[in-house]
Structure formats: structure tokens, C-alpha cells
Image 1: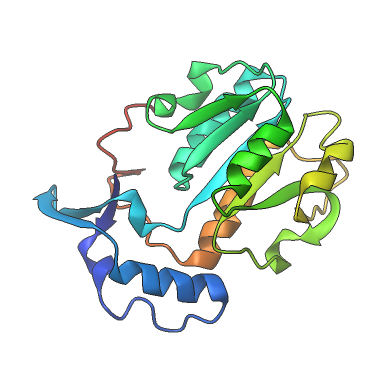
Image 2: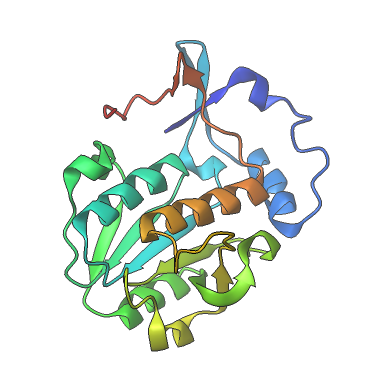
Length: 212
């Protein structure tokens, strides 16, 4: 469950929405399930209060990257992680969040894509040459697809409905895949205007998170 500060529940928080995702978020808030039991001064909202998005990782080789993606996915409210290939998870990178984030494994990319499409998700691949992610208009249900650290998506980009890229200003060939995934998830949530989690002292508060 994602904690929300009481002030975030103001009926006026949806004012100023313009793009389709923001309008969807405003309507869905009316039907969200709120647990009004107070704890540490917060009201807790179930995951139904966030617009669902998924993350597909395809043939990522380094366990550290999977672990870091799990941590970021949990932080940004990802509904599910779909792992394609033989990737192993390095628990130290996930910082305990691997115990709470839902995930499934698939032998082929087509299986993972079809699983998402059967639930109405649009597939957005992250790859050089796509539309800058800050200009991307995400649909109500988005599944991000991340490819191999060295080869990227390659021909597999053909399964995507859209291709997005993260612009760079330096001289490195590409971003680390875990970093790219985190940026994409942040940009998605920024568009939705989903209320953020509350924080205590210097960290965000979550009953289920025990990592550092």
C-alpha cells in the first residue's frame, strides 16, 4: 500500500489537468479504495489509486540491473515486472522490494507482450531513435520494454506500439538500463500527477520497505 499525506486528499488536487492521463487519473480517484485507518498521521491508499503500468525486461544480463529496476519499479508504483530470459535477481540491488513487487517470468518476449496486451496495455520500448520521452503521450495502460544492456531491443522493437528515447547531452553511447528504466517510470508518473508517497525524516515512508 502506498501512503499519501492527508493534504494530498484535497478534492482540489486534480485542478489544472490537461492531458488524457491526467483526466483519467482524476476520474479514477473518485473510485479509489481508501483505508481510513490512521497510522503515523497518514491515510493509506491501495494501489487502485495509481494508474497501472508494467515493466518488461528482455534478456538483461546483469543481476544488479534487475535488482535496481525492481527497487525503482516499486518506488514509482509499478504494477508488475515481467522478466523475459534467464536473468537472475541480485537481492542486494532490490533492497528488500523484491518481496513485495509482483513479477512473472516468460520464456519468450511474445508471451510477455501478449500477456500485457490481453489486459489492454500498450507497449512502449525504450530505444535510441524514438520520440523524446518528455514529448511522449502515454496511454492509460503502459508497459515499458527494456532490452539488453549492450544490444538494446534490436529487431524486437517491432513488437512495440511506440518507441521512446531519453535525450542525452554527454558523450556516452547510452544510459545504464536501470537508470533509463527509472527515468521512464518517473516521466510516466509525472504525467499522471499521481499523489506521491509520504516521507518521514529523510526517507519516504512505507510499512513494507525495510531496505536502505
